[in-house]
Amino acid sequence: MEARGDTISDAMVERIIHEPKFIAKRVNLRELTPSEKAGYLTKNVKLECDAYDCRMVIRQCVDRPSNFSVILVYKDVNKNDHAIIRLNGNHGRHKNRLEGNVVDGPHIHRMTERYQLKTTHPDGFAMATDRYTDLNGAIELFMEMANIRYSDGKKNRRLEEFF
View 1 (tube, rainbow, N blue to C red):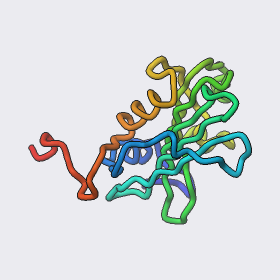
View 2: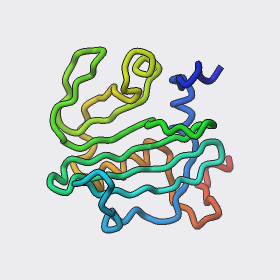
View 3: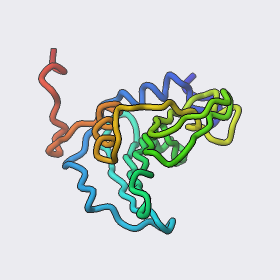
View 4: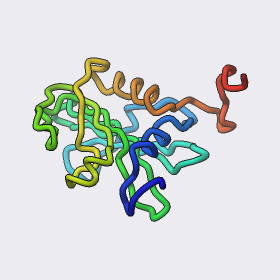
C-alpha cells in the first residue's frame, strides 16, 4: 500500500524524488516576484513528470538573501500539496522535534512517515549540509537530488537511459 490515509510512505517519497522530471529552461532568479507573504520573492516552476504532479517552489527573503528555500512539491490525487524535500539556506537554527537535535546553517528537509504521523510538520526532519552556500547552489543540488533535467519540451533523455 502506498499511503495510509493522507500519509505518504517513505518508499513513495523516494519514488517521487527519483522519478525523472523536466523543465524547459534554466531558472532565472531575476524572475522571482514578490509573494503574498510580505518580504519574500517567489517562483513556481512546473515540472514535467510522467508519474507525479510536481513543481519546484523557490522563495527568498528580501532582507536576508541567505534565508531561502527550494522545495519539491507533490500534488496528490486529492489535490493536496506535500513538500517532499526542501533545501533551506541559513535562516537560523532548526530543531528536529522528534530527535531533539539542533541544525545550524544550510540544511535539507525531507518528508518522512514518522514526522507525518507524530508531528504537524511532515517535512520537519532536516540534516545540515555544506553542499551549497547560496540560492544558485541550492537550485543546482536540488535539481540533481530530484532528478530534474532540462528539456526542449520533448523530454530529452540522457543517452545512458536507452541502455
